Image: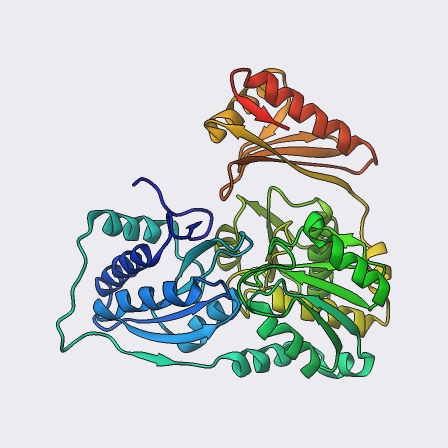
Length: 459
């Protein structure tokens, strides 16, 4: 079958690729792998709200049980809460049945380490080898695993409250509009914010799994209707999440969309004011992160795109915060992965403790100008990016090949990178000087086409 795991787990359209049979086989492969490490492994399993989620989850659980693995079923939960559950329950592994921000016809499986972090590349490769071989461990009838249910919501709520100034939030009583897209966050974030003392208005909190009101990808184009509602309501802040709530993007009181880099930087600034330490992000994230870190005299480390890589580096360095440009922020002392729930709470706390508005806090951040774009190509995307990099290097440009090809300029950069989840090339550009980001964007597209004359490109 070839490589089946993407940036984090495996995803596909139901039932063409990812279906109950696939889930059963993947669970047996994962169970066989775990049985090779421990005689009686335990695994936590949760899912998002997709229509196919329950049947996929039950098939996956059946595969684990048949392999002699005990299962702790945490039901419908955001991915960060499943990751949190794995860590707190001290299991040997975990799985989230989710396709995150993908449309409703997709589903997926994210495999986890015992500490809740996404499964390492090495272990993914081992599971995939077992999956493709079809050589699964088969438990006897006496030693099949058993399933039990766990409700982890209150545990998570208590852990969050231990980490924030709940009194400051309760005193400020921020008005928060929450758009959950019908995803798993609808069962957690509105109640948590209300518990902290916020006034909350929920949008798209029905969890039918159709995502009928908007696409679960929380980008600006998918949030036009939400922005209109926010503008009419004038809350202190608005937040929108994806299907499994590992990301959070924000809007101002007048409905203006805020890039994920900026809110990450705002959270970074607030966290570093409480505790200094290394910051980890990817090559695709704005240099605003570096500027904020300079204020606190801490180092920023950059990695490939993907929260698994960022989280791994955070653990290695003992970092205090990490994140990506897409609205995913990692708080390693709570969850070893992106947590859109806690990100929202920290923004609310920052507003409450500072006594300032969300807009005022954003205005205090360093200024950078960005374009985030994508083009569709037919063919080998990674090879196309390498051809682009080779051309730019031959012309004397400085090119960072950490992930894709990042061309460095004196006042900015442009990144050309093949997506790990979609058949597209992402093109991100940034500059300190307004207008230059457009020059770098257009330059990159022109050079990409020049380096790949035989490739079909859709701009």
